[in-house]
Length: 236
Image (cartoon, rainbow, N blue to C red; front, side):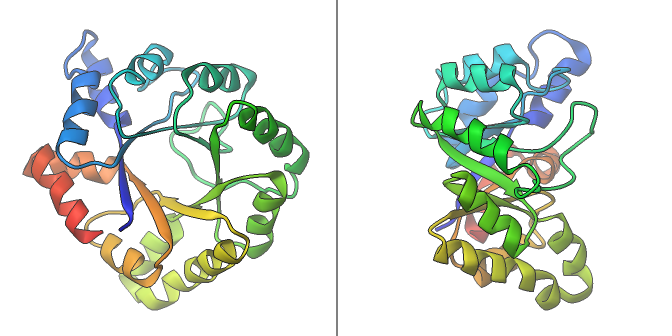
């Protein structure tokens, strides 16, 4: 079964809107796991607009399933994850000013940089996933750089799903097949929701993990967090 990692960035966004500690991020992470989540994902950004550096360290003591920290591999980020030692580090190419992840790595253009970063992370026995578009040469580049997994950037699939889900998923299916041939694990994330998730994982059998935050937390406002996590788990 594909694992569900709940991205709790949005919970931190709500907390930060008022200051203080409501909602309590650590309690939310515990509850997500108690309610069935297979892991917790966070993306601490330099401006700390949602997950703070302090949060990233504090969560290590309460995440007893998979802990995935994603972010741009600045030296500060590298130093942080090498101290925290999460179960997985997902490298994204976001510059500090972007609102949300909006593209995958060009693993060919950035081959030298990614190879150096991944080599450093591997010294600490960290599993490394690289955020990529569904493109064969880019996926081959991720393998060359030393990645353990790729995370397929699924925005194009989610937008195309409404018009023609079969055509929308084809590049992702081809990418997942190639990744398997290259012995790369396959994760996926961005804009996946209750409407498009089931078809995605039913068509692509080797998806190890999906990371879902915005849609899941939004659904939880109406349906409750426990119920929402269980609904997503049933789709997987």
